[in-house]
Length: 261
Ligand code: COA
Image 1 (spheres, rainbow, N blue to C red):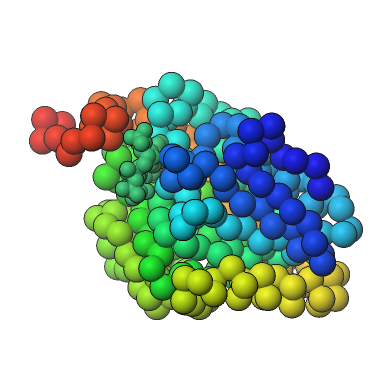
Image 2: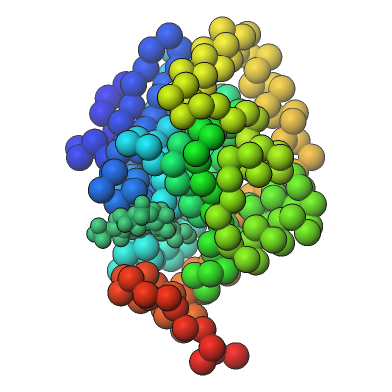
């Protein structure tokens, strides 16, 4: 596989039928910027068309999965439509036909969690910390998560994670059905890779068909939900609440929402 981007913010490696894609922006806790979304899309597009790729493994680096969307980009280059890099990535991962395994270590925030809903097997290091802080940022769920999270764990548990936006542990993620297994931090990558190798050794056409059938009853609703959430999310990014939350993040202080009704 060719390098996915010049700065190597997304690293890729193909061996034994497994394409490993790694986020590589550790100084910003692997926050995903526009170039990274574009590189991820390109990686998935190339993987789809390359018969040598039989499974994809997504991982972070330096003890971090990803801190989610780059919050500076939300202010300076927010998504504006279906062709925005983040929306293109969500379409690519949510319609990807081959199996995807994710290995989550350290922080997984925002889209770092919601992208897991589109993976097939998810393993987490015991010390991993998950968070869905959309409401905390004056935003709303994205990536089809308002459909998939309640479907996975029921309304009350979904509401707790999405309305309070508090961090939750790998054990909690596993209990909620978001994660298949929790592993010691040092063994995570080897275990996730082993599962990806197992998938790569399975008959590929049967794997693709089974993945499609597993998602059949919600596939159409999912694309509509991603689009609807995307429209709300883009509008929320222009709201005074989001402006205050993003400013507070930059200024390293707590946001004050009391002035907004
Ligand atoms: N976008 C842009 N920059 C980010 C970022 C993000 N999502 N997450 C972290 N960074 C930057 C920080 O601003 C900081 O930059 P600086 O060194 O120039 O000040 C650097 O990455 C390290 O972050 P820091 O908060 O010091 O790391 P930490 O290990 O203490 O905490 C997180 C890690 C992920 C828990 C924390 O950074 C965080 O909560 N980030 C925001 C996550 C978020 O809200 N994502 C969007 C969801 S929609």
